[in-house]
Structure formats: C-alpha cells, structure tokens
Image 1 (cartoon, rainbow, N blue to C red):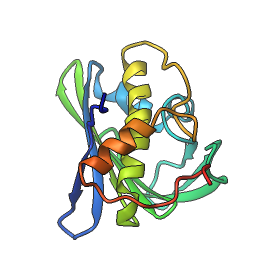
Image 2: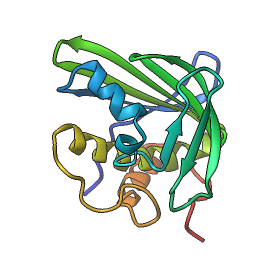
Image 3: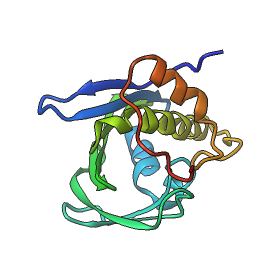
Length: 175
C-alpha cells in the first residue's frame, strides 16, 4: 500500500527548492511554540536534539542524530511565537505558526533545500518526524524510531519518487 504523502515539493519565489508540510494542532500557539523551541520537546520528534539560542545569529547545536555527526547552525530569524528559521547542514528550516482560534494553531514547516536532489529523502524523513509530532500533540507516544536508517521512511521515500519529486541524494546511515 502506498504511503499517504503530506508534503508538497515546490520552488520558492527566489527559485530555491523546498518541501513544505502543514498541520493544525488542537493547542494554543504558545504550546506549539514549545514543541518547536524547547530542546526536550524537540527531542521527541525532531531528527536531532537541538539547543537553540533564540535570537538572530544565535547558535543552534544539533546532536544525537543517528545518521549525522553533531553539527551547529545559526538562527536566521525569530519572531516568538510565530516564526523561527535556522540553517542546518546546508538547508534552511522555517517554522511558521498561525493561531487559528484560541485552541488551534496551524504549524507549517518549510525545508528549503540546499540541493534539489534531497527533496524525496528529506520529505520522507519529515513524514516520520511529523508523525511523531502529531502523536505528541495528541498526547500519545510515537512507537519506534522517528529518525535514522531504522525509522519507517522507506515507503514515504518511494512515494515521493513515484510522485516525481527530485531524488538521488545519499541517505545518511546507509551505504
């Protein structure tokens, strides 16, 4: 059975390729902001632990990703609790939050890609990570790994390839 894909491949106005995901969570914006910025909250769904100095130019320290060495990035922009963007391993990650009503927040993740051929790989990885975030937002625990070579990304990856999304980049943690 093919995977249900929730991401969209697009070219931004400046021509850069990206994959974008959007969800609506039954939480106020401040709670969803913590999902995005608190290192302990992030560790439950993001591919790596991220310690973020929440100011433009602030350091972001990534650790614990099973497929990558520990790295650093920098905060590009921050507007609590509505926007955070930072660079990570050649990509730019943008988190945009919009209060829908007092109990619901629209969460949008845009992964601006440093290389177009990473779109299918990154899209598949975000599908698994965001499934973990979806479970967390429902008060449930995501079963199994949400990052790394053993996470259940392969069906999503094939789905993105079948949809014509650019692919071919190496997959961390795999020969």
